[in-house]
Each structure stands twice: as C-alpha cells, then as structure tokens.
Amino acid sequence: MKLGIVGWRGMVGQVLMERMLQENDLSHFETTFFSTSNAGGDHPFSKMPKVDPKLKDAYSLPDLKSMDIVLTCQGGDYTKEVFKNLRNSGFKGFWIDAASAIRMDEASTIILDPVNLDVIKKALKDGKKDFIGGNCTVSLMLLALGGLFKANQIEWMTTMTYQAASGGGARHMNELLNQMKFVTDRVMDKETNLASRILEVEKRVTGLMGDPAFPKENFGAPLACNLLPWIDSDLENGQSREEWKASAEGNKILQSVKDIPIDGTCVRVSSMRCHAQGMTIKLKKNIPIEEIELMLAEHNPWVKVVANNKTDSLKYLTPEFASGKLTVPVGRLRKMYMGDDYLNAFTVGDQLLWGAAEPLRRMLHIILENNTRA
Ligand SMILES: NC(=O)C1=CN([C@@H]2O[C@H](COP(=O)(O)OP(=O)(O)OC[C@H]3O[C@@H](n4cnc5c(N)ncnc54)[C@H](OP(=O)(O)O)[C@@H]3O)[C@@H](O)[C@H]2O)C=CC1
Ligand SMILES: N[C@@H](CC(=O)OP(=O)(O)O)C(=O)O
Image 1: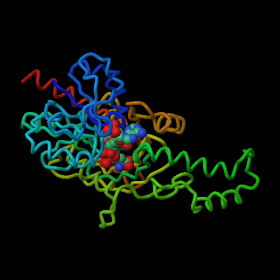
Image 2: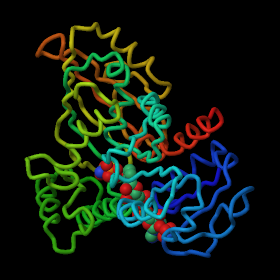
Image 3: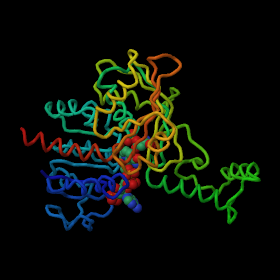
Image 4: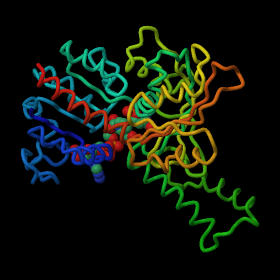
C-alpha cells in the first residue's frame, strides 16, 4: 500500500518515526514523506527501501490523493485546510490523524486498539476510512483502567489531571525551561543554599512571575513554580474543552451503550512529557481490591499495576518513570472513606507515545491485516 506521512518533523512526528523505525513499519509500505514547508527537499529516510527520496507538497491534493493511506501529525489547522478538500477531490484512502479537528465527526473512529479493537474492526467492515487518535489524557486513562471498563464496572468517575508541558508542543516545553532559568538565574546565582532566607526568596520568585520580561508567550502565564488550572478553550458552561473530552471522547472510544459520566478538572503542571491523573471511581458494586488489581493487570500488556505503598508509588507512578516508555503505571488503588464501592486510583503515562503516536502506527497494521483478509 502507498503510505503518505505528513508532520514527521514535528514533536509527535519524531516520536512516531522513532517507533516506526524500531518496529520496521516502513518495510510494509511504499512511503512518501510530505512537507508543508520544503516540497522537493530532502528528508532523513531517503535511503530506506521503498521510500520516495524527495519530499512532496503536503498541500498538493493530487499527490495526497495518490496515496492509499495518509497519516498526519501536522496539527488541526492542517487537517481543517486539507481534509475536506481532499475527500471532495475523490480521495478514497484512509486518513489517520493525531489532531482533534475531525475526531468527533460522525464518520470518524477514535483509535485506541488495546481498548476498542472491536470498534475499529467494525468501522473497517462498515467501510469507514477516517481513524483519529484520541486526546492524550483520555487515551492514557482508558489504557490504565481498561479492565474495569471492559468488565462494565464503572458507574461514573472523576479525573483530576496533572498534564505535562509537552501537551502544548515543543515551544511550550522550551518555554517552561526558560521560565525555570529566568527564576533560578535571578534568585540563585552562585548561592545554592537559600534555606535560611527562603521566605524572602519565595517573595522574590512570586514577584518575578509578574516581571514583564518573564517568558510566557506560549503558556500565557507562568508555569514554573506555579500551575495552570485550565487547559484548552472555554466552553462557557464552566468546563474547559480538555475536561469535556473525557466523557465525550471516552464514551465514543468505548462506544458505550449508555454514557458513563466522566468529569473533573484538567491542570497543567511543570512535568515535561508525561500526563498524570488522580481518579475517583464509583464502582457498580463492591469489588475486592485484589480482584480489581487482577482485572486491570490482565487487560493489556502495557498497564502496570503498582502496589499501593510509598516506595513503589514514588518509584513507578511518576513522569520520571513513565517518560519514553509504553508502560502505563496505575496505582494508589484503595477503597475510599465514602464507601467500599468508591475506588481511588492514580495513573501516569507518556503523552507522546500512547497519548499521540502509538495508536497511529498500530492503526497502519490493523489496516494491513484487514486488507490481507479482504
Ligand atoms: N503535542 C502533543 O502533545 C500532541 C499533539 N497532537 C497533535 O499533533 C499536532 C502536532 O503537534 P506537534 O508535533 O507538537 O507540533 P510541532 O509544532 O512540533 O510540529 C508540527 C509541524 O510544524 C512544522 N515545523 C515548523 N518548524 C519546525 C521546527 N523547527 N521543527 C519541527 N517542525 C517544525 C513541521 O511541518 P513541516 O515539516 O511540514 O514544515 C511539523 O510537522 C498537534 O497540533 C496536535 O493536533 C496530538 C496529541 C498530542
Ligand atoms: N490538549 C492536550 C494535547 C493535545 O494535543 O490534545 P488534543 O489531541 O485533544 O488536541 C494537552 O494539552 O495536554
């Protein structure tokens, strides 16, 4: 099959390409790389077999139309500019996309195959062609709690998120580091032990956040030494768009017969590339913790149930542990004071892997398999 890849140079694209090279994915396709900025130019994969050595124009409808599959992690603006026109021009191939732009469209299927392979297979059987990666926080939550969703044991749940700077993109990650530098350069200099005058130093740090030179062009606010309890746009019903995605996308991924209410507060924190979330889960009945742990652990090969003790929680339930890994640790599993059918849980995962790139490359294999069988 002819595969066209758009957005390979961006941050999500780089993570995707790293995984595709690790898994030798390109060997299954005749691949063309596209660019929005350098059509006709070179790319780093040109020496690989069955790869077009030159970049094609990512806005050229005829070039895109000649592909069997277009996979894009170029972003929502690109999708909005190209997708409809491409379909209107007669493109009958598969469109695989990391962006949220057409995720909730009727024709789109949200892909997270360890959780909804049956939904994906049915969509393929029904002739659907648009397969879109889910929101990172939602995908990571579903992977962590897949066992409980599969057993249909969740009545409702809340998620309180701790989302990394990477969710905003490369410029945001860079800005976070610059914010940290801006502060530490001004309060620490060569002196590293400020404990004896820490209250005075804290005042200075907080004051620096209001300094006109404080770098906040991307986040719009200080994230270093701070947190931001709003992610994405304002839906003007009290909810942020990121919060809305939990229930809307979660239930679409699961194709729930009756929607499971999922809601909470999404917060940006100063971790670099892993999103964490604390969850309160209202179970349909009292299930013993050992049974819950087993259900979660057996659901998929990537989830890692972490024993609910201080040592293991601090070792495994952190962005430091999860960064660069496909493993999705879930822990702090305990019944809550509210009753035995209330479960506390905490999970963390790499938002660029399972949260963005991994479901896209796995979809390529699902399409190949489906094609072989057809
Ligand atoms: N960041 C995230 O956490 C997630 C992002 N997504 C989706 O993926 C989309 C892409 O995100 P992300 O990868 O972070 O975006 P980037 O800004 O890193 O990359 C997007 C595109 O920008 C162009 N570009 C311009 N200058 C540079 C440069 N100096 N280095 C690299 N690329 C450059 C490239 O296009 P070209 O080569 O054509 O010039 C590239 O493909 C998002 O808009 C979102 O829709 C989805 C889930 C998570
Ligand atoms: N909004 C997410 C990242 C993202 O790209 O989400 P979506 O794919 O739903 O637009 C975050 O900031 O962490």
